[in-house]
Length: 574
Ligand SMILES: *[C@@H]1O[C@H](CO)[C@@H](O)[C@H](O)[C@H]1NC(C)=O
Ligand SMILES: *[C@@H]1O[C@H](CO)[C@@H](O)[C@H](O)[C@H]1NC(C)=O
Ligand SMILES: *[C@@H]1O[C@H](CO)[C@@H](O)[C@H](O)[C@H]1NC(C)=O
Ligand SMILES: *[C@@H]1O[C@H](CO)[C@@H](O)[C@H](O)[C@H]1NC(C)=O
Ligand SMILES: *[C@@H]1O[C@H](CO)[C@@H](O)[C@H](O)[C@H]1NC(C)=O
Ligand SMILES: *[C@@H]1O[C@H](CO)[C@@H](O)[C@H](O)[C@H]1NC(C)=O
Ligand SMILES: *[C@@H]1O[C@H](CO)[C@@H](O)[C@H](O)[C@H]1NC(C)=O
Ligand SMILES: *[C@@H]1O[C@H](CO)[C@@H](O)[C@H](O)[C@H]1NC(C)=O
Ligand SMILES: *[C@@H]1O[C@H](CO)[C@@H](O)[C@H](O)[C@H]1NC(C)=O
Ligand SMILES: *[C@@H]1O[C@H](CO)[C@@H](O)[C@H](O)[C@H]1NC(C)=O
Ligand SMILES: [Cu+2]
Image (cartoon, rainbow, N blue to C red; front, side, top):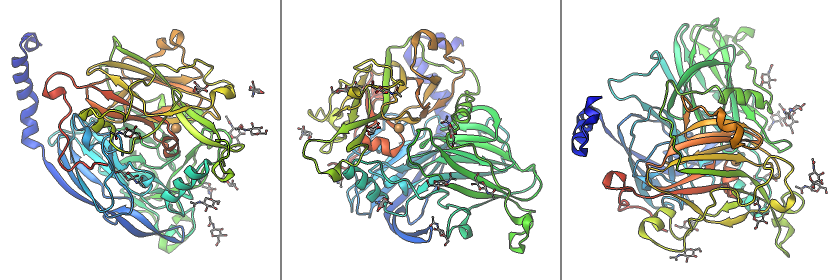
């Protein structure tokens, strides 16, 4: 403690150098990877489709690094579409150019082009993932990004015997780009998927799939760390393992205070690390996931994906017989919001954390759907939304529009005017009963490219308030470039008078994607310590397509360590 009373910056800097930099220098590695993105034939559900993959793999390669390592990934676009890759949940301290969302931090890598993403993992451990961030390419262009503790460090829980990433995905019997294009053209909701997948495989409950069902082997008595990732496009998912308890130890690459449950819920973008012990009679048990569908009446994919947890001493399935049939898993009802809420409200940080107080920016953003009246004279084929309308979505009544001539970050950094404005409202422009019966006059948002500007170091509280415009729904809201604390969540309209008392400022969970409850709200806090332009959006791709997004423009602070780096020489331009 005495050392902190040394007031000169110089001495503190030296101290930090010796305390942190030395072991880091000793162990940190740089990993180099090549991602060749190309069309590859992939057969699922009895059909072979030309599918965009990385290095011919679906899902793509798993990256495994240690905290402190640097990743250098050269992405070559041999597909016929514009492409970018996002490293979901990586803080990207001062390296916003490597974050990836198209037209936000870079222009797309054009067909035939390439770009090298270069970034360092600083102070993060656990499960993240990477995915395309251009149109709907992420339906098939995604993979796990696993961050182990620094060499010589260990998990804050007993070291598991095995570790298994389980990527939950969605599969269409169609080109996902065609699915989103059709929706954008017609104004209707896009087709729902035909299957969910676990590590790319739908599993036993679908046609032409059971021979390829993913097997997770276990020895009796051993403990396995399952790194569960919802890499699906448009659906929150419940996940369970038949007859086994799950001990939750991490979420979004932050450790959590361990707790035990039989089912977890993940919105797209979210990850959950669970320990599972093979403490049941040797057999085969279903690992299963299916929808948590919070919107009333909206169509959704109601199928169930499975993998198999197989005890190595279990009777061999080839020998047949009832005993070889996997034990079925029980999942909550599709609309079981109580179970989803019980899960999200059980998450805590493992110990007391430094939650920002003395808030500088007190923000309230509504998040929800909208309905556009069709322009006069528009052909009916372009107005296939409810009663001849078109679907849209917004935050604070702004339906976000991406630029197409410069990325937001480039425009900010190089002072190119006319690409965006910084007048995104700090509060809803019209106050109304957000979760009540909203007047039709409020349903149509305004399209614009509006950002919210934050000073470097600002302490931010953001209330994410769901609306019931058209329909209330759970929204997984993801912030790029940051982790944040979720200090509270609830149903109905956020009420600062009564709800502030419920804030957990001691050990709230830290995440990069918050589940905003259906017809409810969530409050997040973070310090704006990473300069750049950072997208804030719903991770249901159908909603971001409709404009459920905005971005924070975080200004540079003082000195090099608080300033966005210079753009790399190979940064794609539009
Ligand atoms: C969407 O579903 C409709 C109805 O099943 C089908 O006619 C259409 O071809 C599908 N669109 C795409 C892009 O697969
Ligand atoms: C699966 O196969 C069965 C039997 O061939 C067929 O009746 C059914 O329509 C198929 N289901 C799907 C979703 O294709
Ligand atoms: C899924 O939806 C279809 C069509 O809407 C329905 O026939 C089927 O019973 C549903 N399945 C489940 C498991 O709810
Ligand atoms: C197994 O569980 C799934 C999902 O809960 C359910 O749809 C299916 O009917 C069950 N199968 C059997 C044989 O009980
Ligand atoms: C959930 O769905 C069931 C039927 O599938 C229905 O009876 C029930 O009212 C629904 N609950 C809610 C909260 O919507
Ligand atoms: C569409 O019209 C029907 C019948 O007039 C009405 O009940 C329904 O609320 C309308 N839906 C929307 C989204 O406007
Ligand atoms: C970029 O595009 C926007 C929107 O079309 C336009 O207003 C702006 O002038 C363009 N900026 C430049 C520098 O061309
Ligand atoms: C919602 O408000 C509209 C117009 O004010 C009214 O016609 C409708 O009946 C209300 N719906 C409900 C469910 O209260
Ligand atoms: C959004 O803005 C439009 C245009 O000004 C207005 O008609 C609508 O009522 C606004 N809705 C809300 C929720 O503020
Ligand atoms: C691809 O990106 C360029 C900018 O680099 C843009 O002008 C073009 O519209 C994009 N193409 C598609 C199909 O989105
Ligand atoms: Cu959403």
